[in-house]
Amino acid sequence: MGLRDVQREQTDYFAFHRMGRASAWSRQKRREAIHNLEFPRRRPARWPGFGPPPPHHLHPGRHTFREPEPYRKSQEDEKKEGPSTGVQRRARRLERLLAQEGMRFEKVLGWGGFGMACLFSMSSAGPGPGGGQGGGEKVVVKIELEGRDTIEKERRNYELMRDAHHVLHMYNLAAEEAIEESDLAAGGLFLEFMERGTLEKWIVKMAKERKTFSDRALWTIFDCLVRGLVALAYPGTKWRAEESAKDFNESPRDTMVHFDIDPTNLLVGGFGTYGQRNHAIAPIHKIGDLGLGEIFNFRARRETERVWYARQSGKAYLYTPEQFTEEWDWHIAAPASDGAPTAGNYRESMNLWQMGWTMYALITLCWPNEKKEPFVYASRVFDRPVKDATYGGDLLYSGRYDDTDRDLRRVVAQCLYHSPLSRPTLRELEVHIKDKLRTRLNNSEEEARAWAKRFYGEPERRRPAPPPAPARERWNMGAHPPNRFGGAARARFGKVFSNESILDLERIRRRRADEDHRPVIRRQPQPRRFWRD
Ligand SMILES: Nc1ncnc2c1ncn2[C@@H]1O[C@H](COP(=O)(O)OP(=O)(O)OP(=O)(O)O)[C@@H](O)[C@H]1O
Image 1: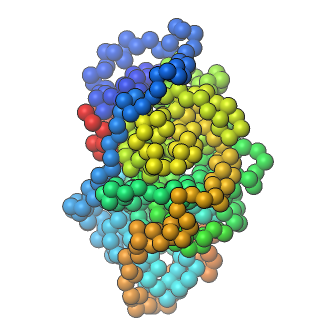
Image 2: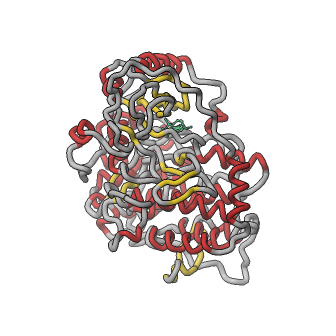
Image 3: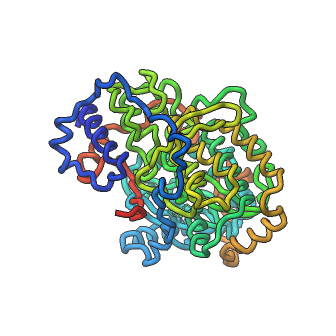
């Protein structure tokens, strides 16, 4: 399928997507319509945009916004039945393989169509990946069960984040070679273990308890998440203290666009000090799953094939305005090269839009609706007047979330603005969050701390360390902290990072040809049935 076919098909698919009917789209059924599609559109001369804000006398209220669906089950709950025999077989194989490297299998953490994650502990007496004694220290091993290229891309992305405090750490362990050389998988990654699992799990817990996060907890978590976004915005930075956009005079140029930020890819770790911050009110939150991440800069945003294929990257329920906007229908080349403000304008504010939905989930304990309703909303984004459509109008006007700090709801609604240029900058957010955390919120720091202890509890107790393995230098980390990488990984990827296209178009085309339901590139972790029919 050539690029033109892909463009026509996407144009049709995204028209369904905007109506909230993406799950009803089928390539087969739409063949005829796709064939007759007018693409690119010529009339009117360009995308007309949204209308004016609703007149004042039409007060938006509960009736204006469709009620979203509450979180009921986490991905983990859905996998309670246990892994399939295929996954179990691979886990056993991995167990045997890594036992020879001095690692003890603990459990399968999760799996999907394309990969699986297992928990191991180090049984070596040598230094562990955290720089401490290896005995008992836990490591997540993520393996890919299909092609090799995704894990390579993910590895390269983690390399670029090696000094970040709010992105998962990747370890460079010698045992990696054992996996590569085996017939088991298409390569593996060693990642830091986040003992409290995914953020989704905590959203579900709160929803089940029929309570809500306090304002202080929400602002504190938001702070962590924004630090992670700053790390993505400035890849390859040596962060000594915590990530801060204030360290830079210019806005991000070579941003890592994640494409898949949602509560299942944000991981919750421990209380304690990371970077320079003591995480006492909420445990640290880190961004994980960089498998779809891509560096986009000024030049890359003008590469036609690259931006068109990236339009389908990620989970359909969280495609961003940069991906779904109708503005695309007027552009045959990369829209940014024609000056389109939103279509294909992949930059750090795209990560922010997806993170906005995580904050939405934390506030509402609900999924975003499949149909994202644009609500024209004029506001001041810090010192700039902005008039644009937000997809988070219900946060402000439905009356359902009035117990949560209005200022937080306003800022999150601004993160959900349609145009990337309307959204707050990371720097503005960082300063604002810091100020907010200094003020009196609806609960004191002590109360918030006590609540966090109760809510998050103690993670699973570690098993006693097993007997030490024969003395042999197993970890090529030496005594260095975990975020230092040995020469092997560096040699494999050459420069710290490059801007060359990392999309394997051939492979994508092949997979697209195999798919018969919708144009999703890869790893479409089905958004479960979270919307009403
Ligand atoms: N570093 C980690 N610490 C703790 N748990 C983890 C870690 N990485 C993964 N997990 C757990 O393992 C599960 C599977 O993770 P993995 O990243 O392989 O796939 P996924 O997020 O389920 O799917 P996909 O890769 O398709 O997005 C996660 O949902 C999470 O519960």
